[in-house]
Length: 178
Image (tube, rainbow, N blue to C red; front, side):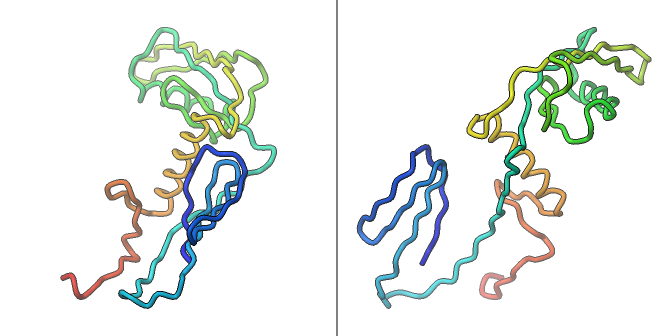
């Protein structure tokens, strides 16, 4: 039996068609192909990597917009100045230079902080404004989950080659293809 997971935008349903059985559950489609006993061709062993993602029921993702005054166009400096506020924000956030994602809601709708640029001691006012709490089906939510997954893969020491991650210390060598 071969199992394949694919993301789809369908509601819950179940049906059978020409040896394929499919079960749709929310956002996932599970396909199982039944082996009809054919012995033609050569057998192939398949391996798959997967991660089981368990979501805490009370976990949320909040979106904030961040403004700097005076304006600062360089994303790297904006990120550096926001890192000065780990006491107020914690270490578990994602910031792309304009939008801040936190796993909790800050106390106020608007939070104001002061940052200092190290090069010339210029003081910046950092205004963090709550936009909305993202739902798990929101496209931004899925993008953030992808970013978190890629960070985890990097922390595991996996290398990105093309669009795929590989473990360089667990490479398989096939002597036929030297």
